[in-house]
Image (cartoon, rainbow, N blue to C red):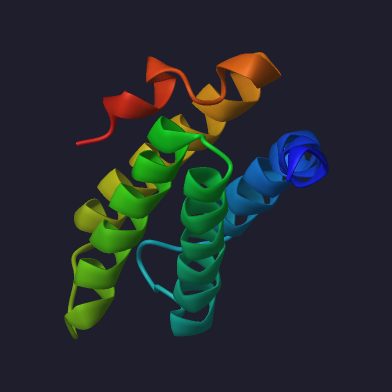
Length: 114
């Protein structure tokens, strides 16, 4: 378990970058269902792994973003401003994770999400 935790911690910057790249490709004016599904999958996996390895706040932040994404994708028509607000939260989450030193990935930086 110690090695798995170390592997998760070491791979976290790449995971956050992948999440950020996926988000940057999302067009709020013409949302792609495939890209929304990819983002949901990444957030779901990150949330589960984070909780498994003791990164509670990181996991909670990922789960909150995932849940908000599920709500947005449940509706047929969502305004671009609503998508932009969600993407801004995603960007903040990714930036916070990448800016934090690795031991602080489970710090209060991730409790900024509503």
